[in-house]
Image (tube, rainbow, N blue to C red; front, side):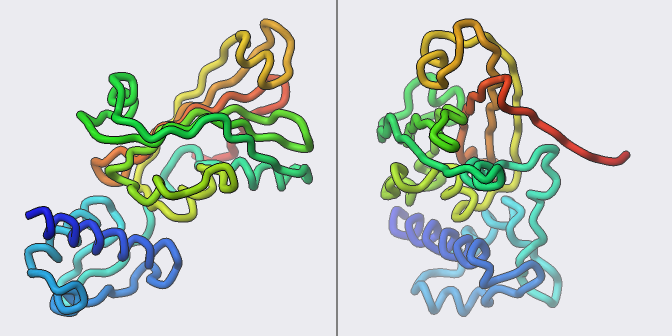
Length: 234
């Protein structure tokens, strides 16, 4: 059972990687089940399990006669897009720099389980600061569910911003944002270089792949340096 589970997870990760790399585009038919069985040396049940998970996550869809194809991403339905802070800073014409303050792989704490809505397992906990032009731009706290993204455990997030890496390598199907305002405390005062009691904006975000929670992040911005703007039509 453990071996079939490992093969199922590998099939799923490999198909996701092909989609994320753009090798398989929306509308493309993926290999037939018997081809995947031969490639991975596994049973039809194992292949079916991997494909069902990807269909439930919205990455694939099964069509009569056409087989299993790559679906059009549902990412575009999010009310707010997921920003790449590194790209945001570059768009401002500023030099980006990442400071990784903490990186820890641990058994999920009670707080981790609450935020990720998981019962158990390991998480990767990250705390970092994003700079723009030598000035603090945002603070970030992030939890990555390693059951959903095991490859994250091997990534050096001192060199690659976690949000940038996740957007490039990990498909997601649903996101939730929560935006709040608060007055800066001692931690924000020092890390962001702002005055005591200054307003800050916190953007919390959860992402899912189907029913599986991928990550939780809380990003804090100085209130006088950041604004969320959305243009839309009825």
